[in-house]
Length: 379
Image (tube, one colour):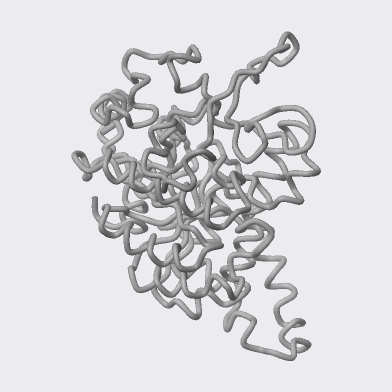
């Protein structure tokens, strides 16, 4: 609790570490990501280390595919990692010591926290089998580490889409492991989330009644190729997939087919929703008159879907458009997030929300706690 307000952090992270691949099947163990140091690094700044996986070192900051991310030096002591605060120990970063994470939550005043994987999972492999193995090994790790404090430490299970059999199995396994939600990135490689090959997985997720979280990440390979620096990555490669996911889920009728599906968009910001709703609603009547197969389009106006209480956004605490986003979606669909333990300046997001003068007392309490309960369920 912070200044008398309960906090339900909708987007925090378990930073990537080798502990997450302990349960990889034998045929994939040799291909596991490996913490790697670079040499000749006098002009590389902090990007002197990364994860070697599938012939690439990620993250990196120069040339095609540039993106920030969870490098080994942020989490592994042998790479020089150290906690920046005695109140948030390093062993809580990757959940190797869940009690350390809880001490961090107490220090921040956070009552409950939703944990997601690093964004690097969005582009680790194009091999459906290896990708599924990595994602499911992560899920098993998180289920084990959060089990003893399951009321406060919530987690979203990674959902393999490109291997439909394993995707369905993963949904069932998530339920047994105690996942609160499922998480995907804006695309599954070069396919929209609405691609017909993913239908069995979506059917299984809907039966499981888990909310779906779409998290920021460089999931669409062509975007990676045009990103040659970190600003490109933030502005294009990691952010634009939000719009692709929105078109897939709302524009391709997934909310019509799956009547109870709730979807959250995390770490993309929220301003983009104003553009996308207006843009799609502008073209929807035209496209209805021209499309030969009508059931490929949504049944209602796009604005009706975002006001249905099934679309949630984690906006930035200092978002100047927040009042307009609330007007569009309603005040029950905006979530608060800290992004802990990433260093992007969201650590004081709750205090920034409390300091805003354009939000009512009721809206602040909803954003900081009650909207997350509506999306994820009671802790």
